[in-house]
Length: 202
Image (cartoon, rainbow, N blue to C red; front, side, top):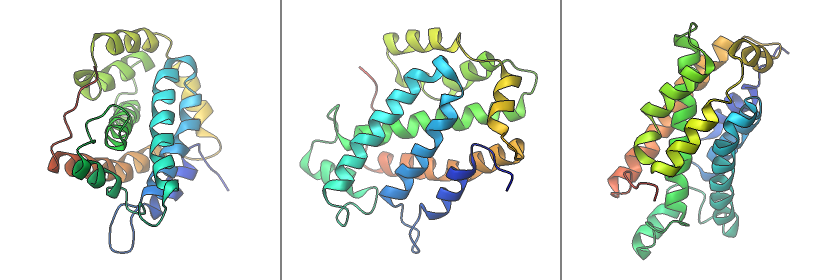
């Protein structure tokens, strides 16, 4: 079977919502985890993003594992913190979900750029995506380390070749962006509904 590196997460996305359309914690986190091997192909340029995503997934997974029945639905963790007034803490699950979603926004935007702007270098594609997504939430320090990291972006043609595997990479990127984006939007809408979608990095 011809597959690209996106195959596992495209398969996983089919299970993110329950039959009644509710976002499920474990399947959503699993999909985010399945994107990490794609980031490995970027090498050093994505090391910061990868460790950030990994840390937030672990935080949310630990909470889920503490009571899988209680936290079956992704937003239950946030609702509980909102009620306890701990949602704004830097180590809260709310904060973890917010930054995980923002990092995923960046990746969706980046892969969209790789499709829409074949003439751009990888560095251009990364910088444009960063400006449109994460930059406004980052403080000076995060922003400058990100800018440095982007200079280490790999050659785009080589990268596309590596992630293509034996499948149709353009079709899979398109599918990834189109299918994943609504989940991210729903996260933002939910976080906005409890007034927590605009927290900034210190």
